[in-house]
Image (tube, rainbow, N blue to C red; front, side, top):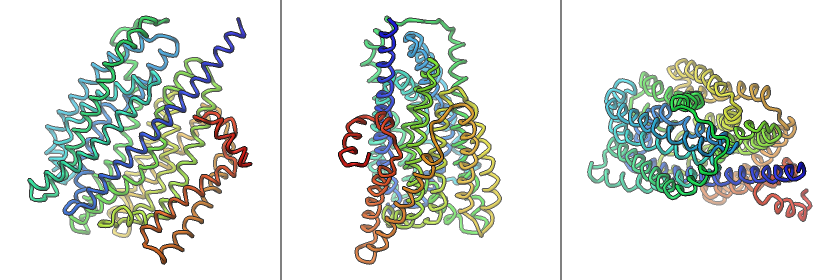
Length: 548
């Protein structure tokens, strides 16, 4: 009997690992596609006549207010619900998991509706008094319905994530971004014709496309949920260990988990809104307002888009880790917690470090490649690129701490970082010697401080299987080799062929060189390869090539 149980547990453990990495891979591809599509419409808007950096400044200022309200109403919801649902599913209580979903749906539908109304009714005051960018009023009005749709969709995503159906949420987000990209181009072109190419109205049109896309993303989730009703009913019928809880107690539990996660997201949103409140109003003291808005557009449009691209790859681990760590903790499976945390942190380092260095080295060439009609901002991008490594590691560590039950630690860490950023912004931006670069420096300091705090907290709560050599030295060597070789290739080619083509070739070779170096340094063990989909096949190939 013991042997049978042991075998059964082993099979279940293996299934969980495959499920975890399968979810990570699905989310990773989804998020990369989402960011690439986001880059497409950012390229279109930035390079479009009469939009450019000024249009980005109007869009970004309105969008950050929307993001703040959206954060308050829904950002913590998917992680909170996935955590609570995965804990119930782990012990066989599918009925309790479904009840959590139903109550969350009713609660957050109301919260989302209130958020939409607040943004719609307060658009004029926010644009004129808070942002001091009157042109942003219509962008806020256009975005207001999206808060409701995203909030309700987040409940569905949390429920599916908790049931280990992470790909459903990933597909809905991908679908939403596809429509957002297409609709942005279509709506902006229509508005341009109707408004005689008004930058203000085109910016509003771009954000209207966001609202329409969020509705379509929600619609997909709702239709998928309807198709799953029979399977959910079977799960409920076969439920064991059901524990009845009153509605008020379930709401309390959801809020207990979601509020700290939401507070962390609010701090992140406040971090961006500090720029929207401080950059233009301080810069216009020593430069024309249009120039100040355009500089904010560079920071909040092009630079934020580029520095957030690497986060799309890593966010898959952050999303999948919360329910995985929660389920493992519910079963007191410390080994799984250690393995998944260590592996995810190592991958995050291997993603973040080369992206930071590559973006720093090729800041100017990347902007010339992507934004030929508005390529300013190389130094802003170089400074901001330093946030990438800290933000990526923050993502992963925060997910582990949230899944482990240490919900307030990420909030406190980022809150301290935000205070540091605010102090640096109000000190450096008014100084003409720093100006817009002061905001970028503030962001780097913010995320560096937050990372230092959460990394210390993680070490005290979770045992890691990571040595300094494996986690820092080897990735740094691989990144240095990549950086030196790729820059040499770029420098050699740009005098022979056009600069944009030289940039593309250098970046492609950078990726190839980095992957080969990581394999040659044997940063991953065979056991870590086995955690990946098709890991055994990868090992056999590497053994044939005599790399392992």
